[in-house]
View 1: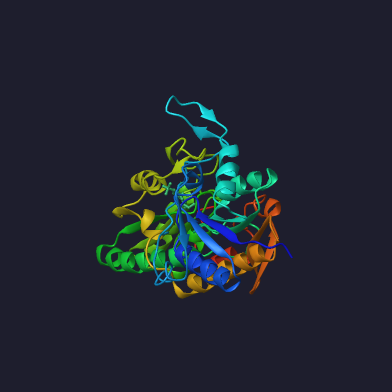
View 2: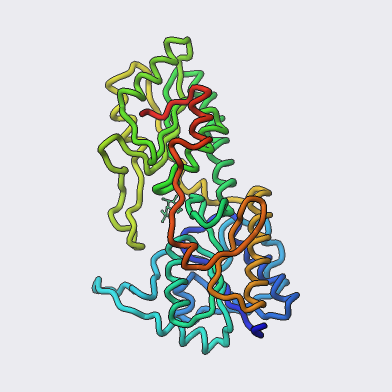
Length: 358
Ligand code: F6P
């Protein structure tokens, strides 16, 4: 068994409820395994700028229920393509390796989404001993059945729908709720089901505005003078593209946004109802994690520390069915998990009359 004495921990990419619970579990488990932990602040930037602090079970006290990440995070710092003020980019990955060695790190735990885990895999190829923990509210990593943070986001979106229903009914309006999820419709689909949406628009099932119109009118004809529509930020009309706010958000990906307003503008000339749009935004990302996410995060953190202590580097923890397992990092970041338009969840929703606008 490889002896490790010091484990670095960083969080990268967008935050997700449960990050602090992973940090707490990893630090506590490592301590019990005789491994010291070093908190690295603000993702990979902390390694470049040497922003470190020793962590212990005392440091992570009371973190279980706290949202965000006490380590800070960044989705703008890729050490392989580091942005300079003049707009050019340089490779600073060697500095990451040097600073990790200088800090006496025997291994590094990266808690991140696909972007941070891609960087982790490249650093592993360069010799850094790494363990990955998947994180995203979008739940779109194929290697794991669930990521922590997802169910907290669903809860926030579901309660938003419950509230929108009351006011929609009073005013006989069409209420559109735009939720996050990037290219995947998991949040929209789950929240739509839990919140009793009438129409759910997801990126995996491009919509036709005339079908959405018909779905709203059909309800009106049945005496339901209001409708609740959940639209994923990545939803798009047939032959169209997702609504984009910023072409490159600094991490090489577009920042999505505007799907709700676009839908409202398309729908308004076609129906008599008033339409209102609510964009849930980062409310889905903050706040205390729900119990499921706290438990999953704790299991992931404990297993990650154990893998590090066992010298099983280059792996990412994951959930397979009801069991925590681990997979090679390279496999973990390769495939995105999208909603299957013919899958059971969509079929169940259609089976009770939910429209998908197709
Ligand atoms: O990947 C998580 C996520 O919240 C997406 O659902 C969303 O598109 C994106 O991050 C928002 O990123 P930012 O916090 O940079 O605006």
